[in-house]
Image 1: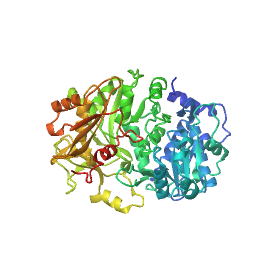
Image 2: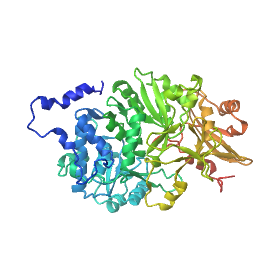
Image 3: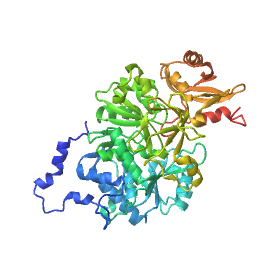
Image 4: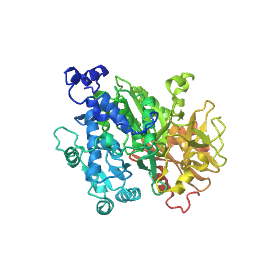
Length: 574
């Protein structure tokens, strides 16, 4: 089964009504027109991703925009749903410009509706991590001031009584999976289709300035309370186009939504795919059997995932070399050359991306094939593991000395902190001027990630500042140790952190997950490290485990592992 529709077929569908002689009706395309305000300068239109949907609904009205189970939605249907949701929020829930609407959903069509429908109502999206606990969700809803909640039915137990009775204006809008044609419409769907749009696109309270806030995305809060990152309409519009270009998205693209839409707004891919006129295959949960089925049956061309996700895809029982090339985008942690080799063998080609919630997701990407051609082929796998260069919608990424704010020497050795500026950098932390000022010191955004800069200008992360292991005064990159261990054929995953050592203060500790069906001993791992690393970088201890704690996006939660190792110590530096 293929979801792809040729552009020629699409154009034929678009003009079928005209050829049939239906010239007395109002043209369909006028539904998507937003008239300019009186006196508005012809050279400026406020940027917002909402316009990306309207353009695709005009150009590809009958093309498949969304697949969820055995249901599918055209671009025309998605635009209709978004308009209905905006009207529902305004008329039934009394939402006004600047109000906050929280969303607690997995990757389902209702979340895509919300990505466009909430800002179309003039409101601000507050995406909630689906793995958060009741108190964490309660804190974010309270801190953001969200007055309406759209929640997936199976996630309702995560919503406390205080949220429902005190913090929200009205009862939550409940969404069921509703992914098969035989499923009964849920509460959300019933409300949606019972809403007749009284306000059309032209009269909706769309943003009148580029830096209007479109979403509040909360950080993980691993070092304290989560912070609300203020994201602008303009930044998302530009980042969506950036992902179109760097992701090589076209109307023929079929994007599998392995990356949660709550995480950095899904790296802006939900808006980017819409901009390109592609198809989004919704993934309600990480089902690797379904992922391989989608690769082989739905013509998937693109997906995203952290190294842990890529690893599970490579090692799944259904894994086999694909007939057509699939492009994947990795981030959240360093993508090792071993991961890259394994993916290539399956006809999956990764691009290593780097970014943060504060930079709208990807802000840097590794070498492309053109730039790689300047280097010997035997160096390619090592090179593409670097983070590379800034994306086209952000300024040049720099590596600065923390104390002097001066650029480090580009010799691949001198370490500094990655600093970013540009139109896809957050507006600041919501209601947190102290943390905003700290993050924007010297007029740049300090990421907290330590890196070197190579003579060709490419940037390579050596560690997260809090994950650097300081042993006897020597800095050890946890990423370097992990990469060495991952070269072992028997290793599936690895996490290295700094643990206590009575002599050196701390030493590397390695948590290693063997591949299914393989055996591995700590002694074998240490012996391998001694052959490939300086002695002081070798793990003091290797723990063979079946799993490590991870975030909902597949990032290893090193702070949880670190907490366990240091729990009997008063100080975290021994």
